[in-house]
Image (cartoon, rainbow, N blue to C red):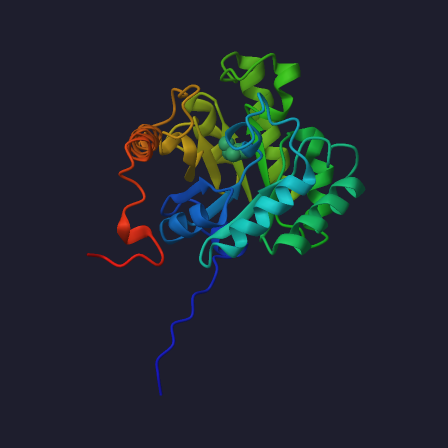
Length: 274
Ligand code: KIV
């Protein structure tokens, strides 16, 4: 009898139970091959709507459609076996009403096989989070800097510096947690605010530009790999320079083709080596 190893995917309840424990490791993924590489190393793969900027070259996340999120989400699920997969609900697909959010979220879960969805918003989205959670849709919240609100915020600046904003974002996180979210992303805010929220809410906080006070961390993988070269946010550490490697590889390939060094004999069909 041969021994078989079965891999089980990390579920939402396991992540929820990590509050205050070993930090939760998250990265974004948009494609199956990248998901396959990241999967052994992370607890959670986030199919973020950042793909609009990173993959499609839009200058915001607003043009991202539900069909894009479903196609990329399904690819990431196919490419992974271990990590919990969470998919962003795109702008305009959930803000109108809890019912609209449920229609969107149920399509995402049914058509991708992902474990949960993420949506941006604070107190104003609490009713929607409660509606989804009560109907079998695990929700990750997202407070602080919210890229889908770029037009009302006037850019992608860190938030929560002044006392009023500090208290508003703190109340937003509390409202989302109390409504039944299983976790909340805190983006682009001051360490004392991230710390206060993390101490206050009973669910894990996942920080991006929100300090090590959070229960976990997420980064956009293309930033970490040096693939997204347009700008590097202050909170990113680059662990690789893949952009430069791609430049070098493409330049070498071009030189080889022009000099007829590629393809070589070993790359040809029907040619005997001499
Ligand atoms: O869209 C995204 O990738 C995100 C992360 C930056 C948290 O929301």
